[in-house]
Length: 298
Length: 298
Image 1: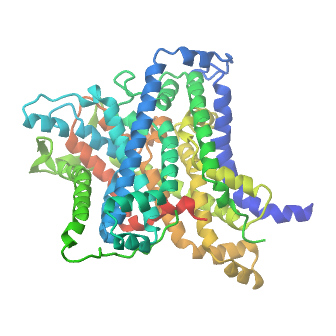
Image 2 (image 1 turned 90 degrees about the vertical axis):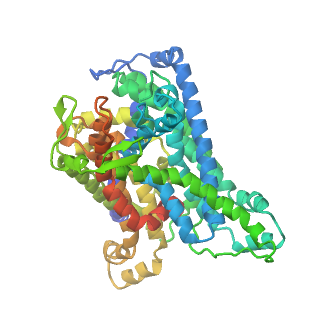
Image 3 (image 1 turned 45 degrees about the vertical axis):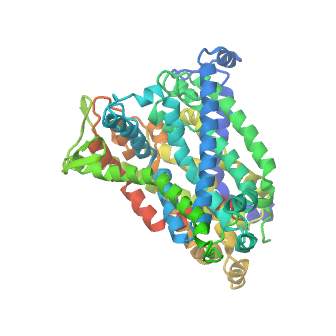
């Protein structure tokens, strides 16, 4: 028993803080969400169990259809923008721009939105869509003698998708560029000697090599888009009314604006379940077990 | 998706006759890249110009140089009916928040990363799988439960509470990246130390750790910046003015409907972004590699 303890004392000691933190802020919350979803807890913080009432409320919520539609639109359109833009940028900056340093400059600029604090990044978009004549879009309209338009009120979803799409593109860009860099150069040379056009080089060499990165980026971004709402919260607050509200933001609003913690937790639970199913698919798909080879020593 | 740092520069081969024809795709590629990238550059240039000018003609042509927008550095800003806390309070809070986050994350991450990379103990596989899964877990969906836990611990509206939450949310990723760095250290080095009579802990502390210093530096910068940029957690869990951080400070200014002063907003934004920009300019190459390859290093 003594030997048993002394052998695993060190790993236990080193992993201890890690385990405590993730138990406290990952496992316990999952458990809590699971329980809270069946209560009608409000700002009084009392545990009153009400069975599946929250889920019934969810099913009959008058706003839910619009919110679900928004969620699908937001995730779908942003994902499309992310992946396509990321792919285009990856190919352009690594394959077409032959000088590595220039490619890096372009990639660095595209990283700017990602490294900017969200509040600053959203300020730039607020200025872009500003309803007064100072906004970028409205000053273009002014050139053609058109009155300023309230873009964020009339096209909230478009604004949300654009703002998120631009940030997300850099994620795909980085993954794709490193994948393109790892394609052996002789493949490209052989193709050029054989007289292949640029289009067929992209289609027959680059895209097949990017098959796994493409799937990875799509699934990964899908998961993060489904549950992310930081930029929407800052840009439109889900409004006007529920025009740009998505499921994740709805749960947040229910909990921290209306203080319906129980109902908010129920919406969260639904989201977490969807995300877990997709995480599981990702897990199976990418054979992440390969990365878990046993420790090299002992 | 391994990263290869070497990239050969290839020159299209071909006769001089078709040389120009071969170049057309490259010219188009540069053009597309330039046109797409320009708006991003312009937006950040606007941020700079707007902070130093009295007003912007048509939204983006600066008029009259002034330092008036930078007055917030020595005078408290009037906001709504009241006065915002001093910018230096917010800066100090942001600094404390990011600094504590970095220290916690690096210490816990290094310990856990080493244990995962080099030690054999029951449940190792399970912990590794969990770490990878948590990496993709929709943690923002758990905010309701996290709120309950913070409230229970008496850490609501306290920067320390938010630091703990943020550390927990990032630690799976950090531990995984650091594990990758440890994996790269040759076991022979460690073995030599053990033969010379050091114990396991001493070998770790005085031989292995110095070898992964560059990795630790990269992770530190990464976590400092993500703490500096954090908005959502601080916005949700911090209420009082004395705990205001730069992101909430800026958000308060932005969300005031009565005061759309882009000069002031852009000056505060620039002030807020300064550390991010400085770090980014000096370290962007290694940062981009960490964010691309970190999770995939085995």
